[in-house]
Image 1 (cartoon, rainbow, N blue to C red):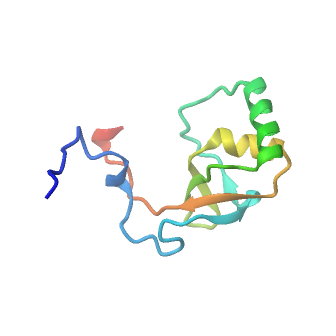
Image 2: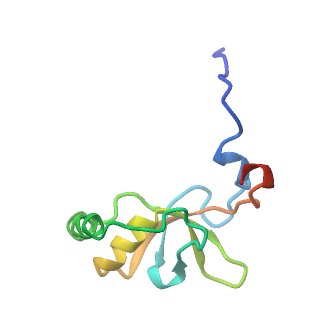
Image 3: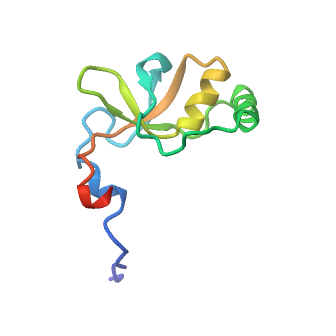
Length: 112
């Protein structure tokens, strides 16, 4: 039997709820209008040139990596990971994007 390696802390998996009823870990497609950026996004500045290049790539090849979103209480979804991809997808004119929907627990105060 392989020995389980320990890690430094619990990681992101500690904030996710085990059973994701909507996707069970799979990818679904959402209208981009149903998704909103996270107000607590640590990145405040986005390089417009890099976003334009990413938008061009998305136009040519599609969005290769889905966004990670969480459902909001009053409807819609909030980005957990992938705001650059979200912004570039909008620039590319996409109306729908692939996402992974995850329910998650509030982040404990000691992790903030």
